[in-house]
Length: 316
Ligand SMILES: Cc1cc2nc3c(=O)[nH]c(=O)nc-3n(C[C@H](O)[C@H](O)[C@H](O)COP(=O)(O)O)c2cc1C
Image 1 (tube, rainbow, N blue to C red):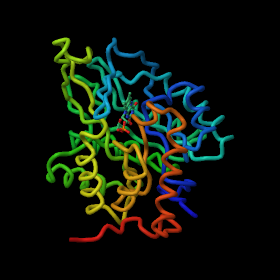
Image 2 (cartoon, rainbow, N blue to C red; image 1 turned 60 degrees about the vertical axis):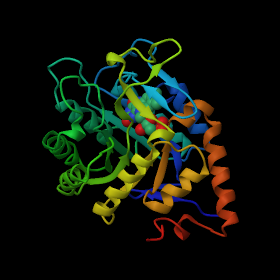
Image 3 (cartoon, rainbow, N blue to C red; image 1 turned 135 degrees about the vertical axis):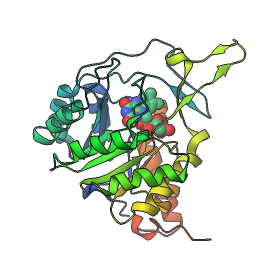
Image 4 (cartoon, rainbow, N blue to C red; image 1 turned 180 degrees about the vertical axis):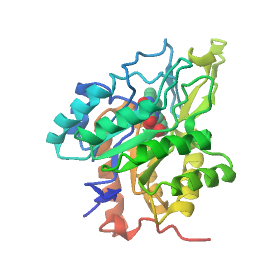
């Protein structure tokens, strides 16, 4: 069976790899992903300077949801440009995730340029994901919710062309906003893929037993993941597919935990899927398990490749 796929022209042996975030920060994490059945190696979002964790408790999960406010802990971009060169030995695509972060009011969008340039010029990455859905700049909306700022940042990084650039987007809840973002994206033909969606930010969950919120940072507000938001994610993938299908590949991320999700999202409009929470729960075994289940399901349906069903959801 051939379940290869491509994202922005880069070949993946199968559609399932890790999302930026859980367990992809250190060299050991990345080496494990390299040795695993993940089809690619996605690295932790990196900033100009290394960053520490938020105070605990900063992450909680149940079978239905995960809630996080990690504060983008990472080792700084230059460590990841070095890691990416060594990761070439695993012979699978390596993806960088670039974030602009500052907790102060001297935010400099040129950080994006500096980091992206470094990955373009001297690294082992195949794709560069620009994280426009970082919620951590406290006095401003996420970049992807500020269409003028997003336009400016994309314009700055997309011209550093060589390796394909993609955007990691947050969920949008109104078609006017997906339309506005698609218009921005269409101005920049060097944007070759979208990763939809990041956590649903500013959600609050309390523990009624203890009579307190479940996480501490950011006034107890965190990013929601898992089953609760799967329909939001699917709707976002659909909305962008309708607007951009012939121009851009979409990677689905969010609330994938079994073959059903992988099948559904490829049937709809994605070219690949990234897994976050399920990977942090089951660790590297998750890639092989989901891939095996997915292949067994395709066999049952007599499909021999992703081409047989990708994007073929029946119309009502
Ligand atoms: C603990 C944790 C850390 C995360 N850190 C990042 C990050 O550094 N960069 C990023 O783009 N997304 C980050 N995310 C979001 C994930 O990449 C993903 O978009 C989201 O969790 C939905 O996928 P999932 O349901 O498979 O977890 C993080 C998510 C979690 C749970």
